[in-house]
Image 1 (cartoon, rainbow, N blue to C red):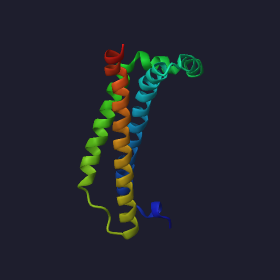
Image 2 (cartoon, one colour):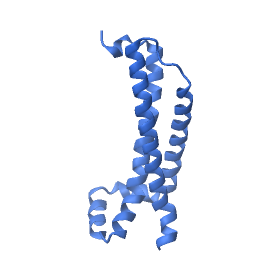
Image 3 (cartoon, rainbow, N blue to C red):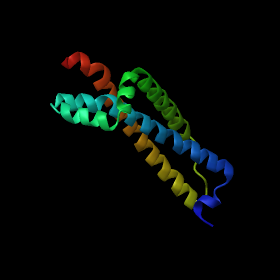
Length: 137
């Protein structure tokens, strides 16, 4: 019997909820970085031709940039939900089984790292999308 097979369905649901939200918030934060921070960085460095090639290759970047308020709102909401889930799961006990306890502790550390990485990516994208425009231009 593998470790995942030994976890009860209720524990698997908690495990799923504890891991899916940080990953979703990471990808939405990455979307904000790609939509707004990357184009601003490329233009600032004088790489406008590279940006044009990137937009030609991935035209969906234009849609992300066009709807950046929605993109940042959804990403921010997911980050808030993920932070709330991190806060709530911090107080929950890990299972008594040593293997499951080790897995629980490891997942909490990984989720915390993913969460704070997501926050850093989101704030970088937010700076370039909304603040740097007024500072540099």
